[in-house]
Image (cartoon, rainbow, N blue to C red):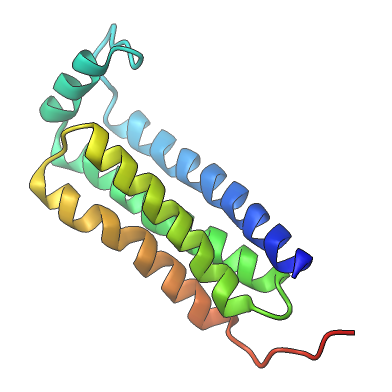
Length: 137
């Protein structure tokens, strides 16, 4: 059980790093407006409304790839519950995505695809790592 919890934590860290890296690529391709203060919620909301679809698409892509990577790592580390560990990472990321979408206005398509991204990514990862559980030693 402890190994599964640690697997989920390592999976979440992996997911966070991968999400950040993919979003950094998106920022390089679609730089934010100069002088944007991310700590000002109103300015950030106006920035999201003005972003091109490609920039927001990179965010959804980051959520999908990050949940896949995190779910895969968690599933590979967990011996008893690889399927559950992978899906637990996706569930945690789903909660984070939902919180973000509820606190900041986003386009409708992002509100639809955003919650699907972590579910899809972690489910695909869980399919790769699914194996018969081994008996505890």
